[in-house]
Image (tube, rainbow, N blue to C red; front, side, top):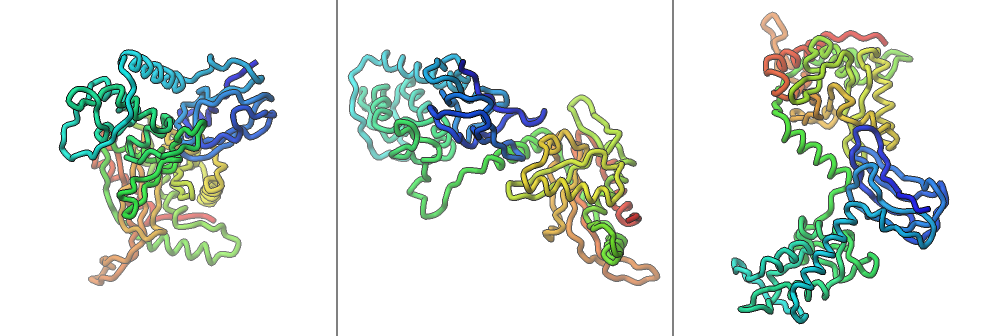
Length: 437
C-alpha cells in the first residue's frame, strides 16, 4: 500500500523547512533506515531516514523549495501503485496551470506559428493581447522580444505557445528565480526530459564580466525573513551607554591567575550582570504580544553565537538559578552544539528566550544597533572596550577603559525612561560585579 512521505516537524515553533536534496530517485528501491532526503530549518540541517521498505513512487519538491511541516513531499509503496491521490497543493497548482494553458490553447483556434524574435526598443509600447500577456507572465516569457503574428504585429496566444514549444520546460522554482533575479533561461536542463531546474540558470551574460549573481543560502533566506519581520512589526529604538570596565578586567585577571579556577570570560561576566539587572527590571524580561505582555518570573537568556552556517541564538533556561561558573559552562556547551549542528531546535526559538545578548566586542566593534528577536521586547549589544577620558577624582583626569553597551528595545512595550534606567542598571552591575569561583 502506498504511503505519503511527510516533511517532519522539528520543534513546536518550526512551521516550514527548506528541502535540500533527495538521496533516492523515483523508481529506486528503499529499505527502512536508508537516508531518504535532507532538509534545513533556519538554524540546523537534518537527514531523514526511510520509515518503511518499498519503492520511491513520486516526489513533489526539489532543492530550494520551502515546504510547510507535515506536508506530503513524496510517495513510497509498491511498484505500479497509483499516486494521484497524494498530490501536494503545489502539484495541484501545477496541474491547474497546465490545464489552464491547454484551455487557452484550445480557445485560440489558430494555426501554430514559428517564433520570431526582434530587437526590443527601450520605451516602446508592446502590443499584446491580455490573454497572451497573462500566459507570458505565468511562464516567464520575454514577450517584448517576440514579433507578434496578430493584427498590426500584436502578440497573441499562438506566439507565446510558439516560444514555449521552442524552449525546454521549466520547473516552478526556476520560473520564480528567473522572474525575481532576472536570469537567463538555460538552453538545456538537467531535470527529467531536459526540464530546466533552478540550478541550471546562469546570470545575464551582458553583465557577467562585472558581477556574479549567487543565490542566497537557505539559512540566510530564513534569517533575512526573520530580521525583516522584526523591523517591520516593532518600533525599535537603540540607546547607547558606556560602563567602566576596570572592575571586570581586574576580575578577569584574578580568574586567570587562580590555579584551578574555571575559564570565566568577560562575556560571561557581562551576561551575569545582565541577569542581575533583569531581576530588578522585569518589564525588560518579557514578550510583547500586541494587546498583552508576557512577563517571565525566570530569566531565559539567549546568546548570539556565530557559526559557519550563520548566526544562531541558543537559550539558557533559568539562567538566574546558575552561578557564574555554571552559566559559563552552559554557554560553552550550547555554543559548541550550535557549531556542530546538534543543538536542540527548541533552544533556538526566539520564543524560548526572554532576553538576548549579542556581543561583538571581540571583533573590535565600538557601536552597533542589534535587532530584536521578536516577541522579546529588548536585546543588548555589547561593544569592545576602549579607553576614554574620565575624572579620577581630586582634579585629576586620565583614560579609563569603558565597555560600550547598546540596548535596542520595542517602544511599543517599553518607555524610553524605563529602558534608560535598565541600561544604566546593567552598567552599574558591571562596575560593581562580584563573583565566586
